[in-house]
Image 1 (tube, rainbow, N blue to C red):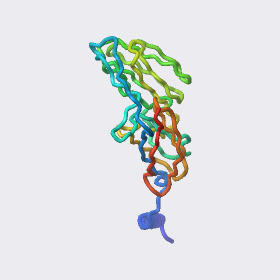
Image 2 (cartoon, rainbow, N blue to C red):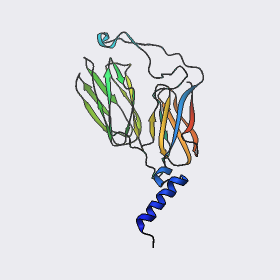
Image 3 (tube, rainbow, N blue to C red):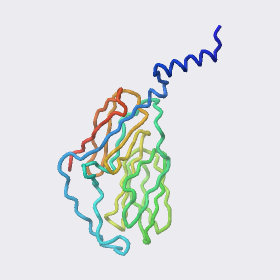
Image 4 (cartoon, one colour):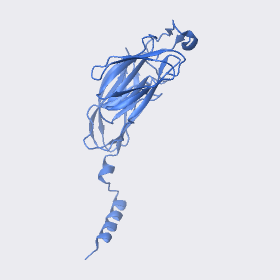
Length: 234
């Protein structure tokens, strides 16, 4: 009778020779794509600074829509409408930071999983104010002097706008993710979602000025699956 170790070795050789995959490997597909602007780029006017110019400067570049030379949309959030059941996606970091530098939020958009926290920082030598009125999470309105860290935990998925009452042009966004399949686009509008078994998915993309769009994507034999998400200009 063949011993168990010999049978296991034979199975391993068969897998290597035939290219068979394990169940974990079968869920290793990816969607790799770009979010782009569809239509003419809107005119973006500089924002006047009327207070604390010694730190904030005299004007600010608008950051509600930042594009690459090729029209890629930066700081858009892409996610799956419904995640695959049981797929081994990498978990999102449970904590992240959002700083206030020269009177802007940096980064302007952050993604945190439900139940995760954000450490809000203030690197400016003046007083700021964190103010937001979420619909699913508790609201907050807290003054923040230089050097103080304010930590806030977000329990429920939603998109939350954060402002500063003292500096009206300041705006940031917290995206509380419902599951791990979320991505924030880079400077070229690029993103990637990994750990996807073959199947049909609905991708969603959100950008603060352009709103939300959806697109059906089929993940199959091609890996990664390429996709372009076009967001109409507004």
